[in-house]
Length: 128
Image (cartoon, helix red, strand yellow):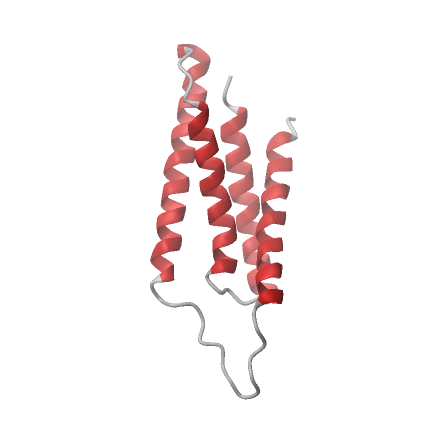
């Protein structure tokens, strides 16, 4: 069994959880009786766009990496760098959007990070 996708999954989950923790620590404390207003509704469309771009790019790299074993036509290295940047943006987006640090959100962000890291590492591993 190849450990690279598992290492990528753990690394991505660590990035996602660390960014959520750091954002929580840097957020100013609310005054007594003041409620958190939460993220602006427009921010949800940004997250959806980031995730769509990451999924499309990763899917393309997985398919072309798999096909490159027989065709010998490799995707450009820049696409892998763009996929890494998109994956990182997807991982840190919840903390930038103001997701509160609770056990439920930390678990969700960690599990999402595992999925993002595994697929990103797998896309890189499929390159011959």
